[in-house]
Length: 64
Image (cartoon, rainbow, N blue to C red; front, side):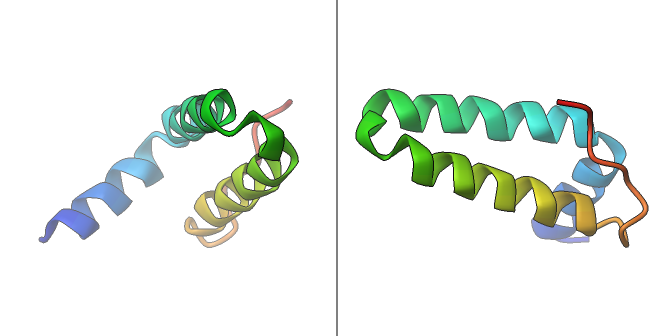
């Protein structure tokens, strides 16, 4: 099992922590590139959609 497979497995087991990590990264990006916050928000949503679909579409999106 390579590092990518381990990361993918961990994300599948802990989707809430993955979402928190994505949000934390987005906040850091907004601090540095605040004038592009709308694009950062769009990218954040796409990453979350991708992560949730990696489970075969079986995981529900967390409430916002």
